[in-house]
Length: 477
Image 1: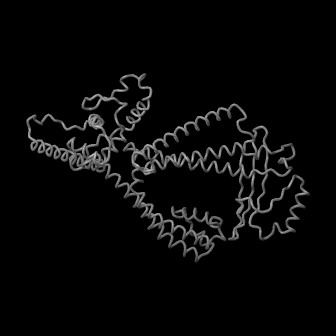
Image 2: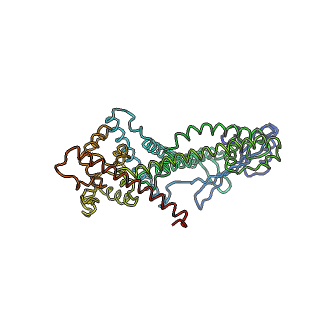
Image 3: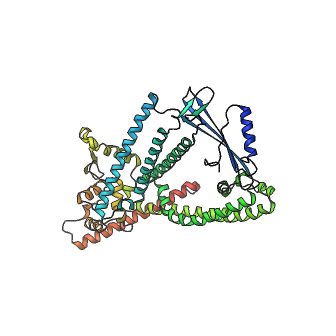
């Protein structure tokens, strides 16, 4: 394959007569004949004004299907790194990034050790997929750093002799930037994967807010079923991919290799297929491929995939509706901008003594005054209370809730729990409870309160449906 440096290499200088003689000699010795699978013409140029080398490659692949695949690759390589003030500033920024990365690694290592000792499991930290994703990104970042160090210290550029007529290495041979090109390409690929991991981390971060978490929660509900169905989808794609390669590989470039077949079959899945072009190549094969593919992949498989996604979205909406009718409704409804402000202020905790006092004070709906730097975050509150939400009975006894949280393995102090209830105004209004009421009367009162909350939730749901109908059919109003 032309992607790897194997085989015989011949250097041609700028002497045209010498180049023709060498090419004729290669033909006589059968280095270049009908059995040649690939050939590559490579040139290296240098721009002294920019201080860059240009590596140009023209590659001709001869596929087993008989198709000729020309490719042109170019790569720009700096002649020297950190050669001016801009490069020095970039080096300083890179040092800061590496320092931050080391700080993150230290923090993750510390958290993993603490959690392993607490739960008495060596890999307890990695039981959470988010932590696995975070660790994977740190490893990928380390790989990017190692590749960059290899690029900076690559000896290919320092061993060159550059003059007006030619570029040679110190052994008077042709320059080879193969290792530099591979390092650069690997570096870009690793950075692309790192960006992809960053996107996944952002999606996981969006779960802190209801309005931002729709995509993440939908993926969470559907990922298991979609992953299992993916095996069926992949099997069918491979089968149709092989069909296109066998039927049309010798006629059409887009089917001349298996990787091109895979991409084009995906495009066919999204209605980019052109039956008539296939029929011009092989009329019978076009029908044999196109009709089963359209029925199985377009009409059945794609719709099943959409149905799985819709099921995940429906499950996400049902869960949110349940939480909106539960006793943690205020937590779910918390504005994202409010969260950002609270998070910003909480991040100032190390310098809280020099901040305005009013920044540290949080006034709750029921009038309680809390210390912003000590209250639990929304994520911690949801982690504590989500499994305790009773959708049928929104009112629960504080003592019972403490016992249930403790039985669930959550370590929460009574002060933190009271702060949660103060912050989100979750206390039942006690004005109707007389001091001398018996335990049975209090229980009956609690049941009555639960019924009132249920009726209010049902009324709100009915009002919402009526408003929706009025918006869709305004003439009914």
